[in-house]
Length: 281
Image 1 (cartoon, one colour):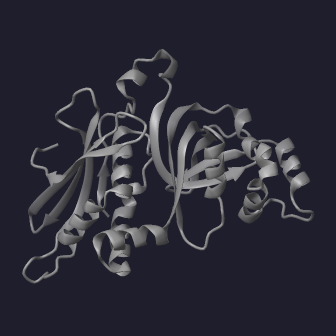
Image 2 (cartoon, helix red, strand yellow; image 1 turned 60 degrees about the vertical axis):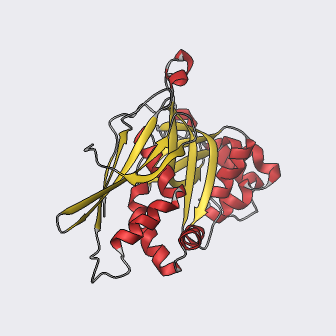
Image 3 (tube, rainbow, N blue to C red; image 1 turned 30 degrees about the vertical axis):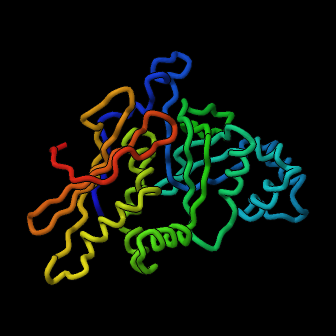
């Protein structure tokens, strides 16, 4: 499994945000995990069972939570629920609050029981710790959600297969190789850039495939994918740029490839496609 070395800058703010006294407690967030939902208090739990079908499971399973909260007439209840974001170990790491009814609907969709492994992506603002009353005594940093997306493993594999022109078995192996890169909090500049690239930039999958699974391994022995590092780009202007650097080794020979991501605002975007990286970070 490749090592993940984050950048030294974790401010996550653009110039305007960083200089605004009204926003100094907020940083940008781009995280991958799984959405869950819980009762924030006893009275909300009692109200839930008032509108749930008679004889419903107590405690509720995911299907019951989704069936009840996804009904339009129960939107008032969905707004009061404690929405959590689980990462890595499966423990809740953040509390989620929707920025509007659109994000609330996406949060509800995020708990829909599926027959496939799913990954939820949350883009928003990380704020201060929650109050004990917000989530039944649980105290975690609060993410205000500006965009929530759910990907299934089938969708991801199909996209890689289509974009790279490879079979699904090869696409699955590639994604499994990259998957550990997504196991990070998503709350620093480097993590945001890395998560954006891993989910959106298929060329890094293509170049990795060419290096670790060459067409003719007898003539061209494979490389090992050993490390990912993120550092501020050596040229900075009004925009904040991060280089995402991938390192591959083969019999003492090392190759570094990088792509450059603009993380100035809430939504990262690619500014330089993959290029050889020669400067030592």
